[in-house]
Image 1 (cartoon, rainbow, N blue to C red):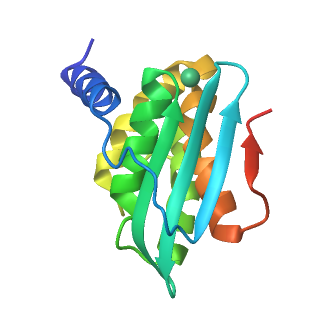
Image 2 (image 1 turned 135 degrees about the vertical axis):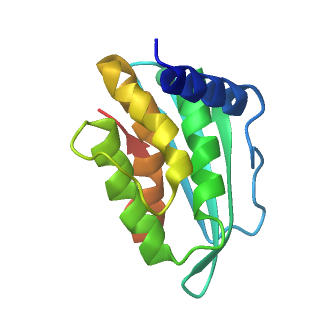
Length: 147
Ligand code: ZN
């Protein structure tokens, strides 16, 4: 195991044990429920937008370590960013998870998720919150399932 892999695993573990922004937002402008039936991951993603800016992001739910860590990293990465940048980030992270992309320049911290592509059965766990974010930003649906 490389040092980098070990570092990524430690960060995933840290975020899953003490997830950041793990709460609801009472005056959220967007709220999306995500569900991954393969693993049983469930989460609710809350966004608060002021104009085009995401002023707050949080999540609640129960899921495996990877889905929780991914959502924790997500909320940290998009807070304070314009919605268009968050949208870009969704595409970059999905590419990273599926092995199509190599880098997330806008948010280097998200590189920890690159390790997940070695475990195809866990890709949907990590992608769940990102699909939910996409829905929250486009407002097309309130419920997201990875199936
Ligand atoms: Zn999972």
